[in-house]
Image 1 (cartoon, rainbow, N blue to C red):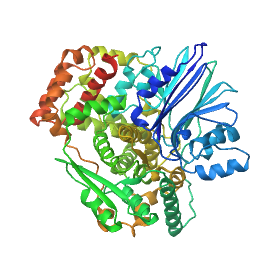
Image 2: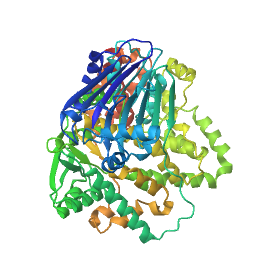
Image 3: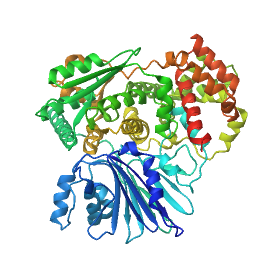
Image 4: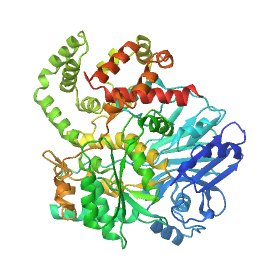
Length: 629
């Protein structure tokens, strides 16, 4: 696991080692063990290394091929690198190291761009081909590792994080207000867009080729298969196949030359991963769980149950977080406004786990493949209702227009959202359901007139709406595919990657093994969601491995006392940041409406915790990444 950066010049200007070192220095925490730099005329490549496999300094990237015509920087892990290496050696390729990184170089020599089809892992890389004078960049199928870039008339820059791009003195960028509007709806900015004009993020399952003459090609090389209509296998066969695939995924991710453990919540996904790890290990697995003082619905008792069954070396932490201190730190790490509050526990547990291990397995990705979210069932219910009352859609739209003339209240907001759900199509319904921040009617009430006009002039539409129901899928199938395209890579994986790498901890997710994801995508939907029971096939397959209490408990997220923080610990910061002259001068929010929201939240009249949290994160981001530049 590492951090990468680099630059390709189009105008003949030389790239200096000093520049690449400055880009690397912005992300030292991603790779505290070593640094590698390659510079040759128009190209510069840099890497900070967190040593996992082959700990020798000779194995630090940039890695080259036998004749020095290819140079690679790489962030991630190729789990099947040993099998690939054997195949490539039989074809005559010579290896200098034992790393998975070098496998990418020789696979590219052998297969070209299609080398991506052979990799099972998480990755973002950039490979300079001096013969073709082009840079080949790629991001893994499900977007576990990040890759951002900027392109102008003179150069192409790239990095694991945007802050690496910003140290280049020739880089200039302004906030992208259309993307900020998207952030205020969802709490994150989906790829390919970013919070900065001129900066893009490579989408999951895509590769990019940039030539020295400034030609850029971006292609998608993978997406989950569509469901098979007639699935001939019996339930027992499906269970055996599912178990075999997940066992293999876990086994591959336990390969490491440094200590490996697991982040253990009390949910089905992480407990299943830990159970399979314990079965494959000769020594007790290190497991890590945490809770917050003041948090509700703690999963610590369930994690302890699993730990006791399998005799893990369990580490349990109860944290009293200093929200006013950790929030600016996290905003700085995330590069863009990002308001998923579970980044806080992810950061803290990564910090504690790193004191004992370097690699941790997680249960990420199970919900999106096996219908684990309760909102999937809710969406299906709404969708079936709209089909039943489809003739009334014009009436629902008419009622919405009438409500727009009334003052915005909590009750009217709920009614309006219900009418929106009843009058929309499936993509519109899911888009509305995923809005964790400001809803359309709230933006209309809160935005200033100038900002509304600015949004009206923007050409970029809501990127979440780009995903239509072209496969004519069941509502739950649609939601899972949608989440694998946007929510999983651009929210959940960003949260996990940044929070863990801020503490130099590598996270691996067996349930995101692409072979397993492809298999799950082809199962009939009733195996993944039976009635209102999500992850039905997971429960059936692994019920002998897990305590009954875990199998039967309802799904719970990590509960943070956000509402209390905004009334107490963060209240002074909230008022100082959202109501001072700097915030008002941005011209985004009506200050009187903002103050009304804060007062209502303070008095318990209405909970605005998610909206106020989004707005606070945004203002801290402005001060860190815009005002200070």
